[in-house]
Amino acid sequence: NCTVTDSFQLSVTPQLIAVLPNDTFICYQDTIPLNTQITGNGLGSLNYSWSPSGGLSDALALSPDAFPLDDTTYTFSMTDSLCSFTDSILIKVNNQMFLSIVTNDTLICYGDTFQIKVDTSLVTGPKPLLFSWDISTGLDDTSIAEPYAYPTDTTLYSLFVVDTNGCSTLDSITIEVS
Image (cartoon, rainbow, N blue to C red; front, side, top):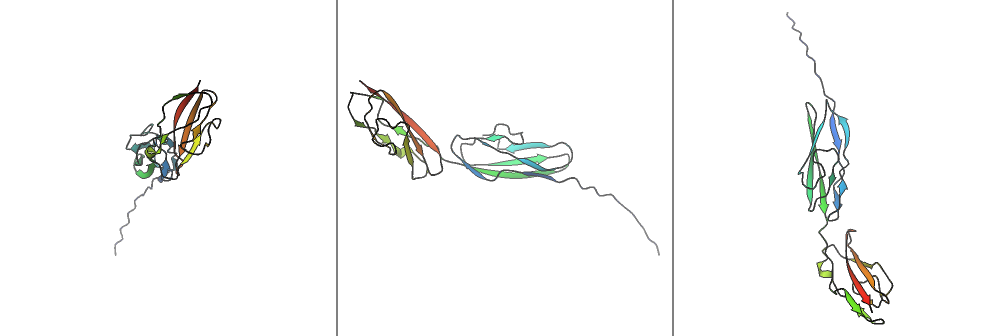
């Protein structure tokens, strides 16, 4: 009756984990921080990378700023001296919005009234749209795209349009009064 005994040592490295922000939505040309938190430090020094690198302030940083122009899935990779961790975040991007005040900068006589014309077909954001003129003086309605204007002094009017996602664009017109 023989007995053989042997032993070995098993080392388990500390867990390597990071928590990324949830998938999110941004407006065209917005920037969002990718605040990533390390919750398991692993073993040794850590190296980080994000891909694709386009639309990031620093693809080798733990928490870069992201400014994609299209829907993008960013993959985060982290390695220590032995193990690796990977996760991803989807950033959806609202379409670029365009607004065009068709009426050129205009000269009117004191007391005249005319309608400002706006091409809203170029506003690609989800409807309904919210229209807001920045100055109410000399406009019959500041909440519509094409109000009637009757300024008494030269005035720069700016029209802001906001879609249901909260994304916005603007255009301006100067009306000179003689």
